[in-house]
Every structure is written in structure tokens, then in C-alpha cells.
Length: 244
Image (cartoon, rainbow, N blue to C red; front, top):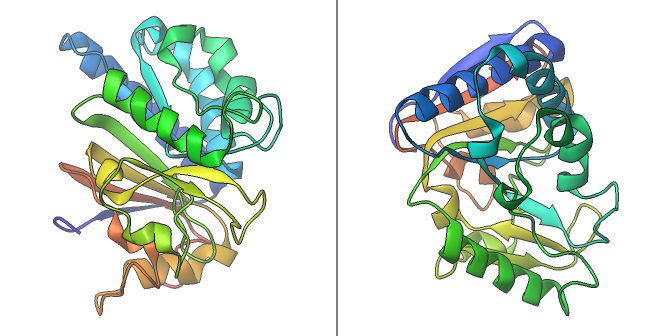
């Protein structure tokens, strides 16, 4: 990692969600006050859902203009557009519709029926990044799996080694659904701030491994391979931090 990551430990998942939501709204408001159009990479999962709902709750008092925020995803499941397995569907239900994000600011990965296959979906998302993506994202948010996967980059998988393109198709994923599109490490590295969001004791071992002073490899621990250009923050609840 570039520099030492910061670790924030919160009492529980609810406190973690409120803290991250407030910090995200502050970053967005500051960027807009400085005249910049902020770009954020969203993630999925239960803790992300809790954070998104807190964003919706806290947003009215934040001063953030959601018509001027660009949203991306670190990974997406190659399923039907209305499938509850899609991270974008979860985000829409939790906060996108509530806060009024402009539709042209939401950069979704193609769904089944919109791209010929997952390889075509990955290529189309790469084209979208080339056409509309920033030089650097303001915030990259990532969940971490019990196996230490981030986005859809899983331990021991060939996608970890892809550095010559911004996105990669994933087939036969160890976690269902089997087909996904993920950003690659070079794209994940294009962020000012990288926030890893982790809740629950089942993920404590993965957190400890990623933050171990002894070090680890991305092949074993993918979460150890990401860092922000300006800051890397691990937002944990007490259970997720229990092995540190």
C-alpha cells in the first residue's frame, strides 16, 4: 500500500454506516464547493446498503447537489437489469431514487439482454470509463469478503493479474452469481480516497490478514492490494476489528 492505512473502529454496523455516510456527504459537498464534479465508486452488500440508507437520511441537510455527482460501480453482477442481485438495484432502492441522482450521472454495467455476454459487458463498461470517467475518483468504496475479495477480484483467480485494461469479465465466480464485471487493480488505484467497509466477525480474519504488519500477497488477500492516492481508510465495526 502507499502509506499506512487509517483504521476506524465503530461500536456496531449502524454506527459505522452513519459515520461513513456523513463522511461521504462531506467529501461531496467540499468537492462541489471547490467547483469540481465528484466521481464516486459504489459497492454492494449489506453494509453498503446500510450506508446508502444513511446517505438518503442525512442528505437533505448536507448541501450536496446530487444532480452533479457521477456514480460508478467497482463491480456488478451480469444478470437482468431488475435483478435484486445487481448492486445498482440495491443502490436505487436505498438512496439513488430518494436523493434524485440525475440519470445520466449513473454509469451502470450492461445487464443480460443488453450485452451479448459478460465479456461484451466488460468491454462496454471500459468504453464508458474511457468516455466519461475521471482521471481519479474522489472516493472508492469497497466491501471485503470473508475470503478477502474486493469488487469481484477473488483470491487465487486470474483476474487479479489483469493490468492491461480497466475492466475484466469474471466467469465461474466462487460466489454466486457466476458472471460479473469488475474493475481491475489499475482502475481501483485511480482514487483519491479508498474506503474499505467491513462489518461482522466472519470477516475479522480477512481484515487482520490484509492489515498484518508481516504482509501478504494479493493472490492470497486481494484486499491488501488497494490504496488511495491520498488516503486509505478501513471503516470497521468492533466485530470486524476483533482480530487486530
